[in-house]
Image 1 (tube, rainbow, N blue to C red):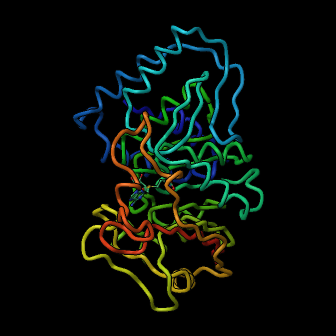
Image 2: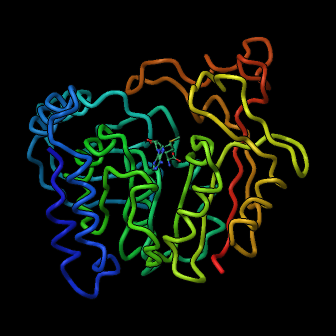
Length: 324
Ligand SMILES: C[S@@+](CC[C@H](N)C(=O)[O-])C[C@H]1O[C@@H](n2cnc3c(N)ncnc32)[C@H](O)[C@@H]1O
């Protein structure tokens, strides 16, 4: 099972930025997470129990593959590989644990490289990463010197993947919680920076999401918003008829200008687009660690500028803004 004891032990310190919310977060987690009620959770727990006991001699949270190193035998590497494969599919990474390289579907390091260049220092910051997946970016934030990183994601399997990784990387200031942003305490106003990457287009109400993000931040805090966009000017928004790049739960894809307007109407200032990037086939692809379909199968085979549904191929913008 996922155990949150260390997180709540740290929150008991009255200087911890989340201290005032400990009880509320605990109640919410208890109301939504009943261990082993998910049919696959027992097999994920078994994968964790099969991880070999290895002593981490050094870690590197600043390289493209989040890394843990130490002495390891070939036998232990095979055991590690097998246990980690029990948590297939691995979507967000890459990771390198004792020379077992987890080549994830996404080169999440490419996104981090595009985004991190525009953030300023994360040193001593208290950070929330909404929709954090396996926690890859959370670990990179810790590598950049953050004080505390809280990642939230409703997908329990990602929490198990993080548990496996952090068993070796041992970043005890990074915590993943099985929450949606709608389930966070109201108006926490305690984070210096909030990231929402790859989440806005999954929300039926983008303004509610922007408002949730705003109230997690202290006044003057920084929003880092990454989402799918389309070409066009103000008042241009794509609402797919049904699926978008085979994804069912995609709702609003604005143009960059329209997205800036949303962010400012939601109460942020100094909003600017710092990056726009069309996802390349090398950035999202099937690998041994994610052997289902990937981007190549979601694009028009005769025209990679379009999705199989005929929409503009996935293009992502990053916006940075400040809470008033
Ligand atoms: C496309 S992935 C992005 C993962 C990662 N942030 C990245 O950029 O690579 C979107 C993630 O958001 C999570 N998610 C969806 N709705 C959410 C919500 N309301 N609150 C928090 N996370 C959410 C999903 O479970 C999924 O892991």
